[in-house]
Structure formats: structure tokens, C-alpha cells
Length: 311
Image (cartoon, rainbow, N blue to C red):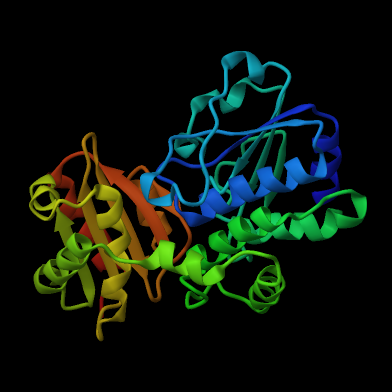
């Protein structure tokens, strides 16, 4: 598959790289890291990245403005996006050829070429593997590409603490930090907490609910976001804090946005992405996301989650 991807890349003069909506560091790392590899490897090609800029990740990269005309003869690559519904910028289907590169379960195998490896810690890790395979075939890893890929790996592994971390993850990370970029600065930008977000985290720890089976939940309405002057994106990142509490086996965050209520699901045991699929979402077996459109859907979702942990 890596061979086919590299040969396909060589066939196109224009390449447009997409990722998922509401991007995380791995979305940026894989999308933009691949773009930087291709720019360094094929300076004669036109390489674009597209999608809505995420303010909290603007220090990583800036998206390009891509015209409709550009898609006509272009190769399109979608990174880190399991299902088509979540692809940012719906023009991804307007290219001449489509490649999907991802590490989520392949329940929506869209594209002309599909490279999915669920054993990988992140899609950024896969992009690095693509470089390793192709470095004798002309691929070049610049310092900027290394910085972006490293950011994606540490983001999706929770700084190497999540179960998705594997021995090759550490090997790749050790190789990447030898490039010329400041990983302390990267950590600081990724994990520095604003004062208002810190105050919201205290509110979460005082107000979450938990069932007798250890299923915790937290509802963050627009009113609460406004009270703490926190964005929905920043609030969603707090989902990890409930995972360190003794006795909690699974947890779910509900964060109200303008057009929906975002659902973040996490588990320490039973697979929960099947529940996410039921509610317009998907993801990894133990970390998934979904969407609901009314607060009345909260209790049925919690009941479904609780059912997995009946004692």
C-alpha cells in the first residue's frame, strides 16, 4: 500500500490534503506533516492543506485557500478521518483520485486507495512510516515535517500514556526529536492551560455524576461555557481529567455547541465506539466521539453506556 501511495503521489502535480472537522493535534500533524514531506520531496509540485483553521492549534500550521478549479486534476489525500461525514471541506470528492490514510477502524472504506492500520498509535505515526518506506525513493523529512509528526504522535498518545502507545511509537519519537525543532516549546503550546479553562476543570471535578457501575458523565451547556468564557473546543479537551479518578470505568462529556451537542466517550475496558456509532459518531474502541441534538438524548446514551458495565 505504501508503494502504491508513493507512486500515485509521483503521478500528480497538484495534491490537496484534508483531515477531519474539529481537528486535534494528530489531524494537524498527519495532514500538515505529510504536506511538508511532499513539499521537501517534490518542490515542483503544488501541495495544499485545507479545512477550517483551529485557533488553539494555529501555532502548528495555517490552512491554505484552495479554489474549486484546483481540484479538477488533483490528487486528494484525507488523513485521520474514519468516515466521510467528518471530512472537513466537502470538496474532497472533487479530485481526480482519492487516498484515505487513517488509524481508526475502517468502517467507511471510502477512496480509491485505502491505507488503514488500527495498530498504529496515530495517523501521524503512519505518515512517518510512509517516509521511512519512501526515503530511498525520494521522500525527504524536513525539520518542520518532523515537528508536526511528533506533535501528532504525542497528541494522540497523551504524551505516551495511552494504551495505543507501542514500542515503535517510542522508536519513532526518539528518531524525530533528533531533528531541529524545540519539543519543549511544542509541549508548552499543546498543554499550557488557560486560567479560565483551569477554573472550568475545577467545576467539572465538583459537578460530574457517576453511576454505581462507575460510569461518569458531565454536561457542559452553553451557559456554563459563557460563565467561564471557554470555547467548546477547550471544554472538550477536559474529558481526560475524569480518567484519573479511582472507581471510574468509563466517562462521557457532553459539550453544547451552536448546532449540536458534542459527545466525548472514553472507557478503561469494554468497547464503546459501537455506542458512538449509534449516535452519529465513531472512533477507537476505547475513545470515541458522537453527536446528539437535544439534551433529552443524554439519558438514553448514558443508559446504553451503563449497560456495558452492569455488575
